[in-house]
Image 1 (cartoon, one colour):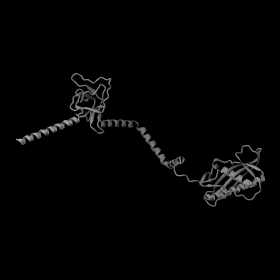
Image 2: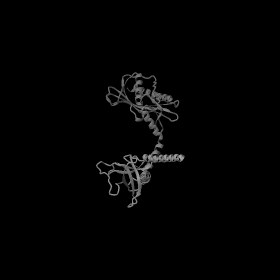
Image 3: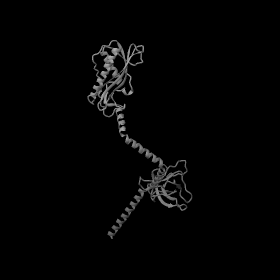
Image 4: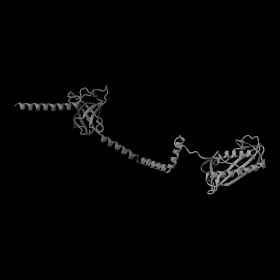
Length: 371
C-alpha cells in the first residue's frame, strides 16, 4: 500500500511539472502572460500568404499580442478577416496602419501595427462585433509576390525601351572597338599625363650636339655689321635634326637635338665666323627694327639630311646685305652639301658641320667683295 502511494505522488509531481512547462512556454510566447486582452479584427483586402494563427502582433516594433483566428469574409471571399488579441490599453486609433512584416529576411510573417496620431479617435467597435481595422491593399503581399511584381515592372520597362537599349549597347560596342584600335595611343596619352603630373620614370635626357665651323684663311673684313636672326619656315624652327625625303616630307632623326633652335644656332655661328674674320658683328632682333648701319639678313632655306640610304647633309640659305637707308647692297643664295660617313648621329653632325662651314666660307668671301 505504501509503494502504491509513492507511485501516485511521483505521477502527480510529473503532471504538475508538465503543466508548469506548458504554462512557462505559453508565458514566453505571450508578453502579457495570462492577463486580460482586447480583441480587434483586421480586414485584409487580399491574400495573406504565410500568416498563421498564433503569429505575433507588434505595435511600433513591440510585441503586444498574437493572432487568434483567421477566416474568409463571408460577404467577400477575396478578403481575409484576422482576429487579434493584444494587451489591454494598446493605443489603437482609427488611423493606425496595418501591414504584414517578417521576422528577419526569411522569418515567419507577423502583423505590424504602426502610427496613429493622438488627435485621431480611439478605435471602437459596433455592438456585438470587435473594433475593425482595414489593412492597405498591398499589406498581405509576401516577398515572392513583391519580387514578381517588381520583375514584371522591370520587364515592362525593358520592353518599352528595347530599341533605345539596343542603340546604347551598339554605341558601347563601337566605343570599346575604337578604344581597342587606339590602345597604343591611349597608352601614350596616359604616359604623357603621368609624366606631366610628375609621375612615372624620369625621361632620359636627349643627346645635344653643336655645329663646328672650320673656315679656310680668307680676306679680313673691317667695319660693323648687324646680324639679324634668320627667318625660316615653321618646320625648320626646331632643335631636332631633320631629314628631307625626295617627295618633300620632313621628319625627325632619332632623339638627338641641336644646342639651340636652327635659326638662332645659324645666327650665332655666323656671328662667330664674322668676328673671327675681323668684322665687328652684333646681334639684331628683327630686320624691320631701327638700324644704325648695315644689316646682314639671312633666310634659312634648308638644313636637313637628304639622299635616303646614303645620307647627305644639305644646307641652304639666302643672304642679303641692307644699308642703313634701306637699300639692298647685295643678295646671294648659298648652298653646300656634304656626304655623311655613316648613319650614326656623330657622323651626321660632322656632315652638317662640313656643309655649313663651306656655305659660311662662301658667305664671308662674298661679303669681303661686296662691302
